[in-house]
Image (cartoon, rainbow, N blue to C red; front, side, top):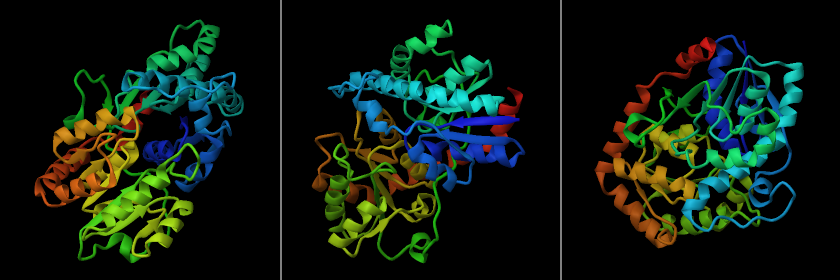
Length: 377
């Protein structure tokens, strides 16, 4: 069977799909992963055949409409979902043509798309093949999908559709303890880290004497003008580094080199989070889904500083479950973050709740089990 996986935007979405794609390939199926041109190193890095789609950056789809006109970013949380849906709808429209070209030469039997990989739904509708939607985090996407339907109206009407059809199968990686009320029926699957690897050093997998705090702002962190991730990491590293902890910072090398220059005691670089997370006593992050899932899987308490409205509901559910704290925008300054970190490190209940969540995740069906559901389609 030929299974096409369609990622969207960033390397994090590649990592989210990689475990199931790898399991399908190891089960004897032919697997391709199509993704943004910028994400090709991530696809190749996890050992999967990589097919490039558009080379336009994610930020362009967020900040400009199809005609290239600048867009105003959403002013409040209620606007965030539809705005994101329209942005990923524009991305899907740009990716749809390259996917059709791929299908002419390599006709897939099933297409698997991430939460907002709407091009997968378009391709399935055009070719008449089963479509699988694969959640890549525990975010709630119900407010996002209508924006994509609105943006993709020209493509949908050409196929005689008013909106994207419901997928033939929905794979959810959210453990039952964190499911929101009214969650859609789904095939649950155990989430397993799928991040890129590197040569390991002993400090990555061996704990020191002091509590270890892992700080990250995600795989898209950069020094670009529209991204404040460097300032976030720099300011947080100063505040957290003042505590009696061992600080490790997961960041691309362009940022890590500057952080190391400012504070040689900080271990900073592109870290394999699946190795570093189990050695950590706390993970501080921007509310990114893959980072959050990595910490949940490892049973590590979290401090979430959501950098956008879409990350807030998931962070709050994790806080309500007892394994995390969330600092909202405006309350997430370096000193407030350091104080919250001290609170988590000094309260064993966070570690106990995180352990309960990790055990629940470990009890869900493995990706290799879910491959059988793909075969049934």
